[in-house]
Image 1 (cartoon, rainbow, N blue to C red):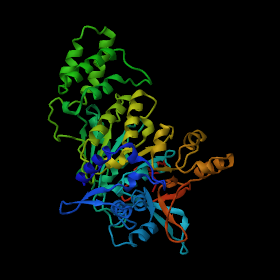
Image 2 (cartoon, one colour):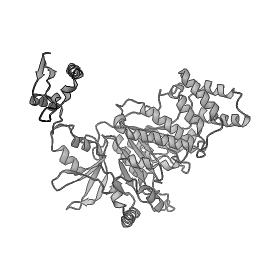
Image 3 (cartoon, helix red, strand yellow):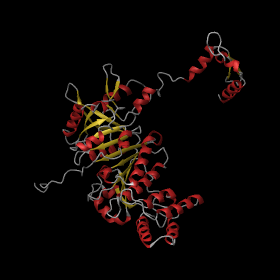
Image 4 (cartoon, rainbow, N blue to C red):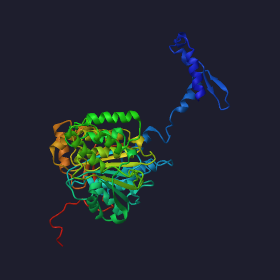
Length: 510
């Protein structure tokens, strides 16, 4: 084929202007010029007619029954699909299944058959896609997130079809809670859970997580430590620059940035100890700047592996069927620093081989994705991850109480799951960014009706916006996209223990 292309190009380069002219019928003369092809014996053959060349070119057109047709690709990448769609599609062909891996997410409350049964809705584990979950505290968002993770990490014939479990990563930061992150309860299902925390808060984090069912055998808590080889000038700039005050940049950054630029030019491996020593010996800092810089270095030192010999060569080397939780809940670590550390963790995870399918979740994202520069940088990294999710084999789930995060996150997510909330301000923040909901919010009456539906959602119920999901069928039995519609979903029961229930005053009564 390469020989054919080169030969053809050489012939085109020798054409004169008259060769490009049209004949009396208006057809370009070029279309009638002979084209060379090489047969299987290596012999040259000249195709002299339109029909012969057309026949040769048509071999590159995808066949209608090709397993990778456009229609089938849309089905393969459907974030959600109903059980009826799965059976209609996968049972209609003897070829490879369109939906090889999936798990039960919940039930379509508005799709009830003649027996009174509601239609199961399945979560596509096989294809990379992104999900946004929001709602008030106690509305069920963390419960839904945990159900999604169960579908992706654990084989269970009654809930999912999972030949190859994927690897899970959860980012968590919450200074207002003394409880373990809810997703860690997957250890009660004998899923291996690793919690990475700040070294200074390791005792407290271990206390929180050790109380979980299954923690003794299936959960470990370790310090999050970076080796020099995992950092570079760019990551150190992020860690040194950001203050926990929105838009605030430390005064010493001009000198530090100069040193980082020199380090980058030298192309030498990063060495945290040498970097710190050189800056602390610099005479250009005034006492206030030196004090501020020392505080920053002291904090970052807690996340550095001074021995460069962590038990695992890379603590963020995710394994299929396991869950890693980066829990940086620590009163001495502010949201901006947390975002910078999460950003570095995300970069290390994305460096893993593409063969390892991943699901990355942000729980209680509103606790750290504020308006700081560090949060903006981390958000941009998330956006880039979502944009390239099909190529890096990554699924992203963002769970937040307040939907006032970057609107771009809502715009890019394939699916939005909205649990109950009461705030008109929250509704105003999301109404223009819910895929497929634009037709429902064009009038004041439409907006009022949609907000009324959100207000009326019960515990575990949600409204789902997912335009590219096939959750129904038309009159001919063909799969139909949700499009501009909305799905009323009831999340399924979890397999693992639930620690997200309200702490009632009467809990001690018999």
